[in-house]
Length: 77
Image 1 (cartoon, rainbow, N blue to C red):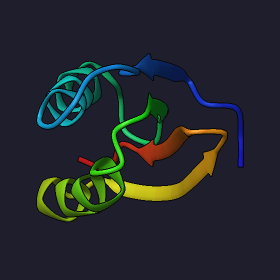
Image 2 (cartoon, rainbow, N blue to C red):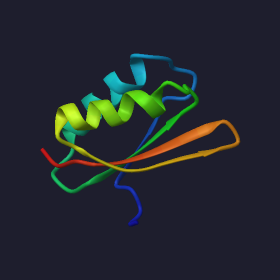
Image 3 (cartoon, helix red, strand yellow):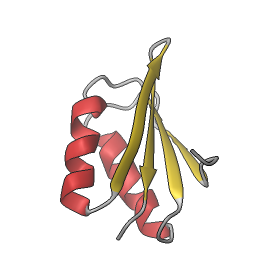
């Protein structure tokens, strides 16, 4: 995977804020750019795949390490 074009820190935020901020950031991006989202909200592992399916964007990968969840998304719409 290429280095993300942008990183969004949502540590300490809980549902629905990480998804809201992700959606806002993705609207500012161009097609095929990659966003890294940092979160410590366990619910994001369920919420983000649903958001991607509903928004038409691509979920590349979810990595969880030491309590930090990194989600990589590619803008498709």
